[in-house]
Length: 287
Ligand code: BEZ
Ligand code: FE
Image (cartoon, rainbow, N blue to C red):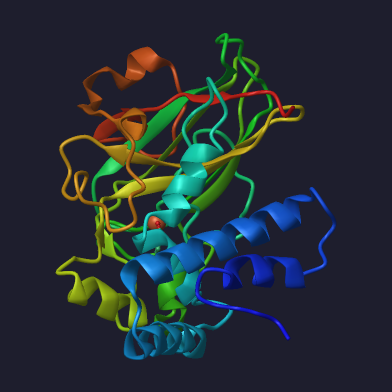
């Protein structure tokens, strides 16, 4: 008979899995079992606490749909998503940040200089910059895929029932021969992550709010370079210091400048901007 107690159980559980020795799967599984068991012993977890956690996870599953993934939201508010982004940012490249739940992989290609505000009210901003490698060599043809909330903090995809087009406030641009991209849009507003489910309950239990600072989302790609998923924030805006999902990094906060010198930038744009946001993306080689 197995002689098992609260100290020998950890090795017994690890051994019970017949994983390929030295494989990544084995490493991750053993690490998880070690930490979970250590945590349980350290905290002397009670039956009630253990069941509360399992019911919380059950509730996360119950509220999840293909459009609402409560487990990712849980990962976000625990800073786990941000930690994975930080660990996987390549040296010299733009820092990674949340993908969030509103990305669509079939957003329309648009010519440089387009306005992607789709008639939404608010402050019109010219967003521009360069896509380069870490030695500042331009990456012509880089793909800049962007999506964002509107001037009231809503993603059109969240309001399709109210007649909004999920493809609004999105665009896929191809950088020019100098690696430059530019377009106009509306300055987004802060918004809350969904807090009507178990993750909202967790936030309330910890006296936390659900707000995210205003941001623009990006995926930037170029052949031979590692794609980056990131966000650009705006200086002096609310919630930069306490983003509910820990997405803000100092290097991702851009200045919002008055639009007085737009002509000097030499861009052709479809809408007259009130302000200018400049942000350069740096990609690192794939391997
Ligand atoms: C977002 O940035 O769109 C987002 C990120 C995490 C949770 C919900 C929304
Ligand atoms: Fe977002």
